[in-house]
Image 1 (tube, rainbow, N blue to C red):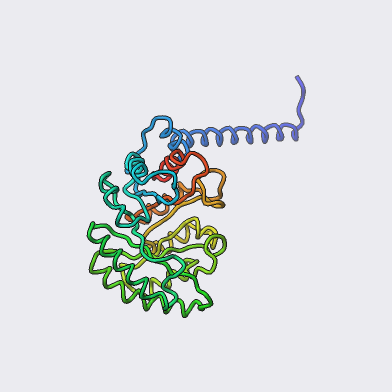
Image 2: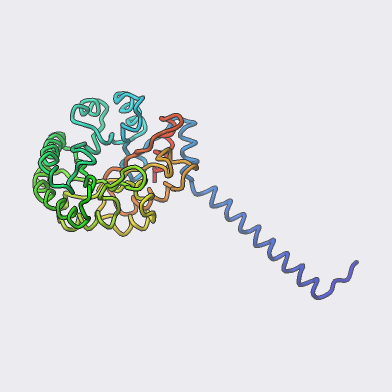
Length: 305
């Protein structure tokens, strides 16, 4: 038997302690992995079995049709309904009969032009007219949301643009209030997709909501766009959720599927939104580069929280 020095004994004991702790940690990790369902596993299971029901989660999921140009509205409505989604985003009144046929709602109704928006007074009459029409059509169905946009600045400074938006919105929000409809101004990035768009950050948008001062005017918080402009998605949602009336998803960079090729992790984002008590709509707005329906099923499964 080899005699060991005190130093050798201590080294051996320390090594054994480290190995014991490592083994315990590994066992704990395995236990957590076995007991805590992961959204990606849920997505894979849903693909394999065909069983997928967004209604099992706390978010009312929907999808933006424009991202899937090769799929007809009829087929998209069938797919959305089969996945347990509640509706389809960004449609016009002419599309409503197809949605209702499949028990869906239009989760966001279109109104005026994106670049020609409320920050520029020369577009106010046109915008207000189109918003009025959209509010009337939405209210007639008992639905909730109409989109609006700040539009491009075209040299207008942010404070003037803010005041112009407030002036227009104070004219139209009483109409929305009476109709039970909420106007939602979308936050968009001006760095990659929408150069010169004024409402391109949550600070400016939240201030606008405060100045308008109506429960029927909120922000459409687009996670993809705000990841580009400012990041810090979950904290921003937790601190400002009362000003956000609608959400859009997409992977960044690229605005594609919610997968491991992009930097956003959607299960905890979806959970953070659900944890605020949010009862509105959560719409997928990614542009697929692979099988579109498989990508949509995966996105829905990730966001069942």
